[in-house]
Image (spheres, rainbow, N blue to C red):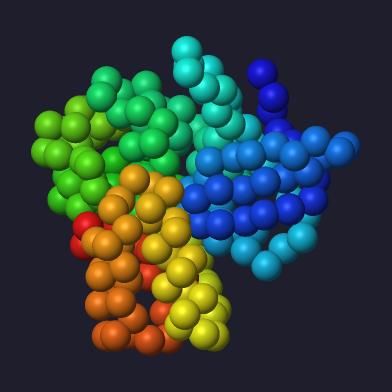
Length: 196
């Protein structure tokens, strides 16, 4: 298995990253947290998890080892696949997800698109003993991005890549930016994930 890949960031969107290493471009499916960690940077180190299926070989990339460990724990739960785990990690930063699991906060999990009450309960029961609570949740600071058109396009593209319909995504993003025009693209996507 590949532990990590270090290289030049060729392309970065809120759901996807292309990292070039020794002339080879690797495409990673990433969470919003990983996007936030590398937004504006030209190079990076990505921790890797490879999913091999009959119809595809997929690479999932993570900015931190803890995020990859949580991804692996989430996918070990029955009914939670890689895309659902990525959706959870896009909605809840690793430290917050650990708090949610350790405090058995079912409401926070069911707020994530695609997570129903049964799946949330299964996640909480299966992972309660496997995660330890974190003291003082770290809040990521994101600087506002100028130009609403660019934010709308990037947020809608990310939501479509995550499996939402384009029309519904555009409507949600426009509603969010109408109320809070200074939000960064990551915040717009996180808010939209809770709305859709």
